[in-house]
Length: 291
Ligand SMILES: [Mg+2]
Image (cartoon, rainbow, N blue to C red):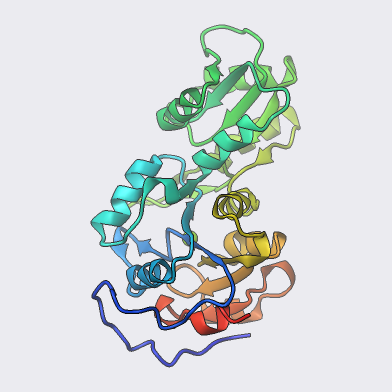
């Protein structure tokens, strides 16, 4: 199904204080993917700030999700604010936020966590009350968390491998993104490091980031709506739409990122979006909020 909008040339940029155009007949929550939906290459995408303002005017909960594990929620919210998007750190659900939440729910609570990842990831896990395992000894570890480790060495990889093989640690991947797009070309992402551990140990990790639905489930939980009442706005079929379909949410594919209309309309099964829109000006609030 495709909604062809009547308003894709409607480029007003003021933050709207108007009365909402629609009185929501059902309580829904909105989840905005960040890269490719809110911004692209550091530039705000037309219609993104307006869509966020409309959801706020409607009084509905909203969240911003990202597999990014390099920036903190405070930094990501600041990035949105600098672009003119009304966003708070508590509304950011990054793969780091969801990883910490996942660790908190493990039973029994892990005593020591080995973090093969960036300083930010380790700091967030430690701030949540977990003891970080050292890379300088071979003490037993309960969990190995693997993300994008810019300080990766053979020794660090070996320590994580021994944690998984000798100590039977739980294996958690922040995400499995293969590449990180950078201005000067791609760099290996968390998936490359997770892949090395998988190859060494034969153990499959629990993956927190998209396409796993953990980020979206957490958004549903924090907004207090059932997953079926989430509207997930994403630019990737295999990450955003598959995740939305996995939890029964409404998946809206926005063509401002990495997916073409042809690919979106050809998608089937778990990759099939409920709606395809050219940009967020076309978000059909009347349709989405009808009973
Ligand atoms: Mg995206």
